[in-house]
Length: 257
Image (cartoon, rainbow, N blue to C red; front, side, top):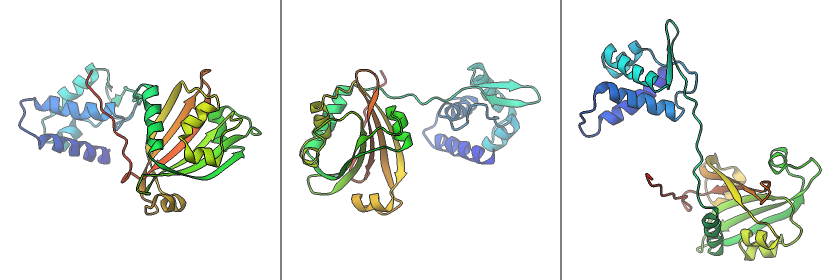
């Protein structure tokens, strides 16, 4: 609870450091607490700070703290129980951002055309259990595993890719994959992707990856996992991407509507 209060106080002080506002103190406190609940900082079923703790931490009156908590309860974000305190009733669920698939795939193809592609390996293997599960394979089924490094036109490596593709019959050769965008090769192999699930996170560079991307071991990399689906809604390709953030950026423009 001490760490949580310290984190909330930091957000409060940041807001207080902005331009003067006529927003009442109770609503400012309510906004800080609501944001922490909505983004999962205060998890579902977690106990909320007491009114006394809030008053002491934010240097406000008990009445101000109570009103902020009452507003959270009115929005069904928390439930208040006599003798048991207040608990979060809102369940945080990350919402995926949806975007047109065709535009994204064409952008990736265009990026590949302006990159220097070095294929480290192409092999037919039985994938690890996690990949088998995603592709719906048995422990005897094989897939094409391809490891590549992409560099910009100045020869600076910016991406390390490991892909696992099920159902490839031909075309996955080192020559093909170094001279053409992999998505074009997939299309020639008869793959028609209708959906891509993409998850972004961060990952520390291993010694091997650090060497390939010219960063220090342990340095933070942008990690992207892409699962591609065919027309039958089956995952046919899993792509694990690691990017040097100094040479690659993932930009998004979002509008309020």
